[in-house]
Length: 354
Image (tube, helix red, strand yellow):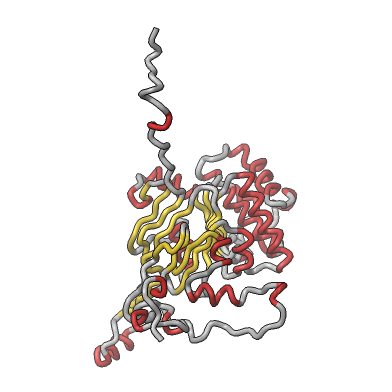
């Protein structure tokens, strides 16, 4: 009797490999410009000087990257490089001026309204200053319980117990839920912000300098909380920070940003062991190390260029000790220099000239 299966014809080796699921978040050629019209006096002066009638800042310039489900990706760079703007684009708080954002392979801008709301709940943001991001007129119970109630995630009758559960999850006593934000310490307020984000059952958290304003001992507690929540809730993070030590401890992969562009991307171990881009090398050279011993501190040379008038070519060339003529006229592409390691530097493709 035939079973309808012939091992000779249908061996597992001939079967097509399973399709890899799309990344949880992916950005393709995303840019964001901020435009501010000049005042009347400046516009009149511009008629004679030839100055433009508006100020244009390109905060994010042609950025592409992805974040796999369950991954923690660190985003580092100096203040003003566009990290927070990029984080707000990922979280849906700012629309990109160009490019597209994908959630599980779906173009967010093309989604129907109901699906877009689902994606907005799935991607939440935790801000740097909890005192500024929490409504001072609302009690903690309202801050945490409002979104799940409004979006119908939890029945109204179960909201008090749900708020208690969220507070316990982030290490706070539910007895404090009737207090206002100003009655808490900085670390406690950050925990409230985390509980508010968790209350809508997100899949992806954008953490924008989430521990930068806290004392070092409190930073360690919040970082441990993030790691525990990652395991318990299967969360995915984009962790934005200027503290490379924090990023090294927390992240699986690191993106380095300079003046609106991603200049290097690699696994954390690879990036810290073998940085390729001159900007990354300069950043890592000054990370405090216990074993480093006595040495002279030297910051990155030169001034940070203005985003109103960024340098031509490679944005880093005015501060780069290895800049070549091509760096001044042509922006280097972000290319793979090793498996999983990408860098945007002409030194990878052009022989240095002395």
